[in-house]
Amino acid sequence: MSGSYTILLSGLKEGHHAVDFEIDKEFFELFEESEVKEGSLIANIEMDKRSTHLDLIIRVSGSVRISCDRCLEMFSQPIASENRLLVKFGKSIDDTDPDILSIPIYENELDLHQQLYEFIMLALPIKRVHPLDKNGKSMCDPVMLKKLEELIIEEEKEDDPRWDELKKLMNDN
Image 1 (cartoon, rainbow, N blue to C red):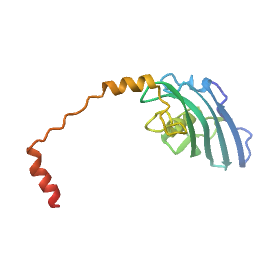
Image 2 (cartoon, one colour):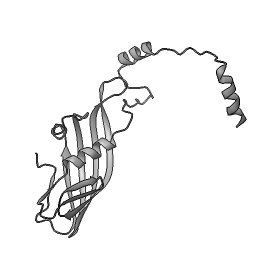
Image 3 (cartoon, rainbow, N blue to C red):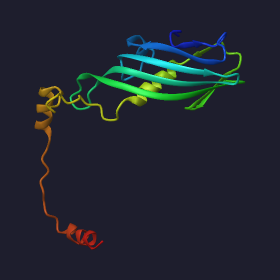
Image 4 (spheres, one colour):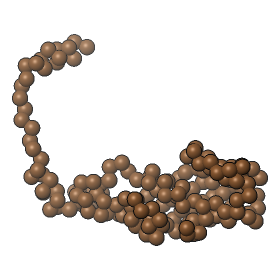
């Protein structure tokens, strides 16, 4: 495992600290099943260390390359997120709560690669499509859009008398 997403805890004094991590293609290669294969992001981590815990504010910004849901072409999706993670020092590792991570008190380092990955994935929009250009036109692959239009089947509108009674009920309320 690469140590480039790790914070050294031994020797870290109580108080405020900050660290930045660069996230690139190498980072996403750590996650075989990831739909994101490359990106250029910066993770800025502000830490407030206390004797019993670390309070982290993790800001991730930049962009990732993902596939468009509409035309399947790759495009650059901007990412910006801010998350809080509380790291408690205890007897064992416990990551069942997404906002609180417990690690053994004797642990010398804190590896954040999994948390960073999850924050990036959560920052992705549900609908992943090319943005519109300055004229409001889709930047999707025009050949694919034309193909999609050809495949759309127009629904025939039929008046079904069975719906008339239901429509009356809707109008009465």
